[in-house]
Every structure is written in structure tokens, then in C-alpha cells.
Length: 223
Image 1: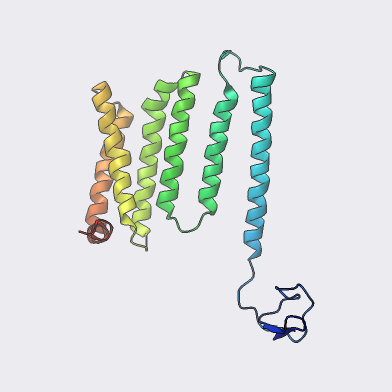
Image 2 (image 1 turned 180 degrees about the vertical axis):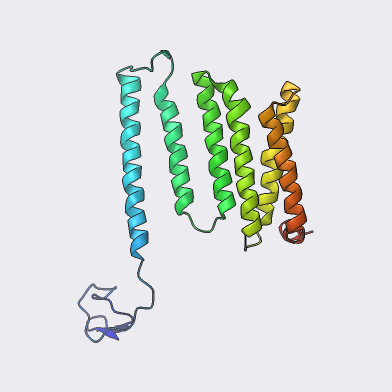
């Protein structure tokens, strides 16, 4: 065990200096009490800082070109495109944070990223005049792919996190389709496919994971 001759205390592990007075320790070191930070985490931290710095550089340059130099997109003289770019940079940063943040299931990460991305896409489409195409085709197709992916994850999930998959099929598939129908009083082919797939996969989760879903409902809602 290491010993500080000035503080008169013994220090466990194998530090080079006393944590109290920063003096050089004497004695033999012991095995570390706490593990070292893995090199992979240090690499990830460096990558995150580099891409965050790059994102800020791009944003600052874009704001300068847009608001100071009045540089506009062709055909959109009144559009502040740098604000749309800032929104998308926030989406990218959110996705990267979800990627590195532990303790969150795959379904939760995928669902959050996809929904935020679609929301930003709808905002962008409304300013760039392709909102109808996005709402009628891109949104239902992406949502269909997402709930299929969540259903596959539900079948292989070993952590009994079935409520996420159940709510994904219900809230992300069925309710938006019904909302679209109530607004337009009709369903396009893509929205019809989304509704059918949602109901089928929702039934599949209940059939194959029914007991686990019931147990999770009891646990979450104290039934």
C-alpha cells in the first residue's frame, strides 16, 4: 500500500501522488480498486467532441451567410435556411447522444430518432413546398418500416421491455392513420398499408408476448 509521509495516511491502489497534498507517495502499489476507463470510451468521447465542434462551425458559418451576407437559396428569397440547418443539426446531435447514452432499449432509441426526424422533415417540407408528398408517402412508409423493426426487436428482446413495442404499434401506427382519415376522410394506399401492418403487428405482439405485456402493464400501472 502506498503511504504519504506528510499526511500520514495510507492510500489504496497505485496512485503516483497523494490525493490530499499531491506529494510523491512511498511504498508498493496495490491492484486498482476501480477499473480504468476503457480506451474505446475515450475514443468515443473524442469523436463526440470533434463532431460537436464541427457542427458549431457549420452553424455559425451558415448563420453568418444567411443573416449577415443575406445569402439565400435560389427560389426562396424570404427563407432563412440557416434556421432549418440548425434544426437538422440538433436532430443529428440528438441521434448521436442517443447512440452513446446507455440504459435505453433499442426500440426506444429508434422510435425517438425516427419521430423527431419525421417532425423536422415535415417542417422543412412545409417551407420548401413538398409537404403533401412527404405526408402522403414518406411519413407512412417510414413509420411502417419502424414498427416492423420494433416488432422484430420485440420477438428477440430478452429484457421484457414489451410495453415499448406495444405502444409503438398502437400510437405510431394506428392513431396517426386514424388522424389522417379524420382530417381527409380518406386513406391513401401508403396510409392504408401502415394501418393494416400496425393492427397485424399489434395483434402479433399480444399473441406472442401477451403474458409479458400483461405483467408489464401490472408493473407500470400498479394494476
